[in-house]
Figure (cartoon, rainbow, N blue to C red):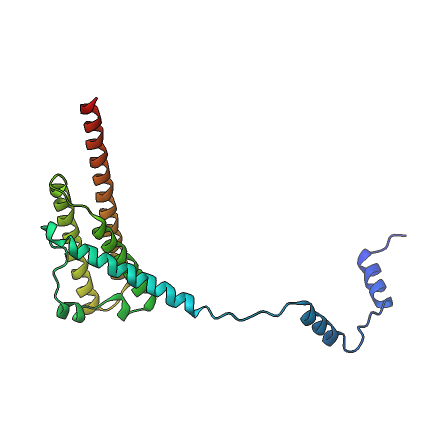
Length: 194
């Protein structure tokens, strides 16, 4: 009575003949089409336009705010002329994705700069950070020239992105230091008044 299971299943398959009726696939596709709701193509280009407008307006306001407070700052971070900027090789010349990365970091750096509140108490701290930021900016220009002269390579592109990240981190660190300084002065005022 010992039988090989494989032989039993093969024998059973041969005995059973299942056939699909003619036109089964067409009927199935028709039912499937009827049961699924029609998808509407929505035009979301207006969202892209609105997002672009918001970014442009916020950058414009940031620049205005930055320019209004520029007379309080003694250290110049970026002193390139427009002719130098036009001849400068940028990420946008390489790839739109790299241009987005550069734009993101530059916009955030400018926003952080615009948010800085300079006072006589914080001027020395801000000046030291601005000097470091200026050094990073000069290094960025050097790397940019290297990118222009030698052509794009992974090391230079990575160094440029890391430079942008370092500048943003430096500004965030400055912001934290200013907040700590402000809190410590508030605590001193409270302690002195008690």
